[in-house]
Length: 107
Picture 1 (cartoon, rainbow, N blue to C red):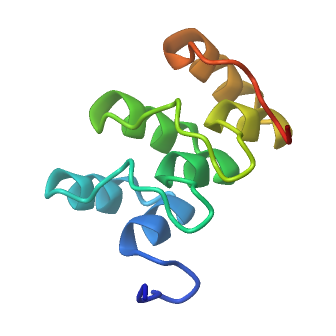
Picture 2 (cartoon, helix red, strand yellow):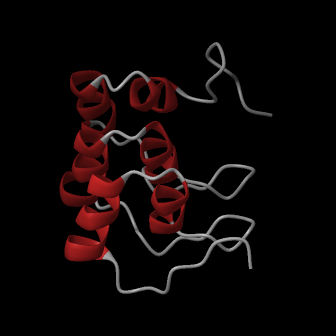
């Protein structure tokens, strides 16, 4: 059973939600896992995309090796989530730098 920090399942989630990049970097530097899916099969990358934080998305992908091909329980990738939330800069970044996977939302 996960221990929740306020509304967040981990300190890493709280740092992403609050876009605390220094805290996020400290946690991931010491081994916080970026690709572990939670009960909804979403990873920290999904949460950063939902929050609309391009800086955190870039840090996850470029510095921490976050996988862009992980799908949630609905079959969606992080880019589908960015598209749904209308985060144009994140969509462009993921399309240009990372995504080699089909766009799926709600299949």
